[in-house]
Length: 310
Image (cartoon, rainbow, N blue to C red; front, side):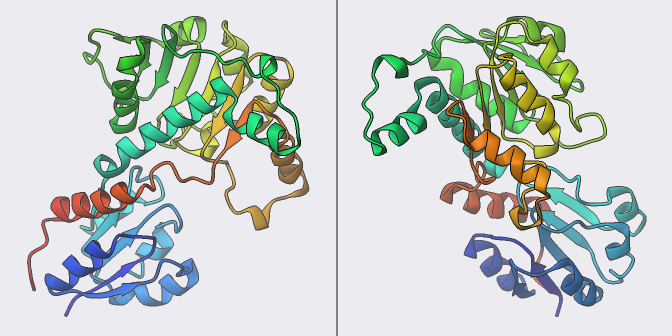
């Protein structure tokens, strides 16, 4: 009987369906890399999230592995080229949680524009500030979207009722502009956007894409959103941009390092500085983790793998 390990949080439907199709399933969302190394030689299938890197060292021990299923978007933690040499099929399921990410991005944006979180904290402290918390309407604004894949296009779709203009940039796509969605280059996004939202995978090209040069190019003091990968935004450059009033605020669902226990003194200082600001909103990488998305990611993964009973 073939064996699968699920290494991250997954809907019960995934385990149930894998068992129905003849697999022995070990649901181990807390398994460590070291523990996986000792077991991967027995596996026919592996389900991962963003927790464990599936590097060459791990794959070298995967003598029976037939497929790797990624819950969510992005395959950057998998050594795809080496997996291909071993005929290991790798699939992801961005269709399953792209709407959840888009809704989360929109919610964070509206919260920042209308001071929901900071006003709540002020009331908790006994302050009732109305004029100081005057909001900014999204309607009529220009929203720049960098990366127009599943999540970027889903975010754009949710923005339509607000009457915005979307300037979308994707280095590897074209011909998608229509109506309120305009294809644009980085220079146009930097010049005209009231909001800039990142929806890109982490690659050598996108690592620290939002650096000092990016922030210095911005013309309209936009709100920055990042629900993609933490290392897309250079934290020191973001802090400098906030200090120099180059952006109106930042909403981050991801950080370059998301293991808070491993933070250096500098990382702690930077995070505390950001958390102290009313114009910064940080959530713990939960944008794609709605209840509905958890099921849809499992369903999409199974559909793509096309596994038959054994």
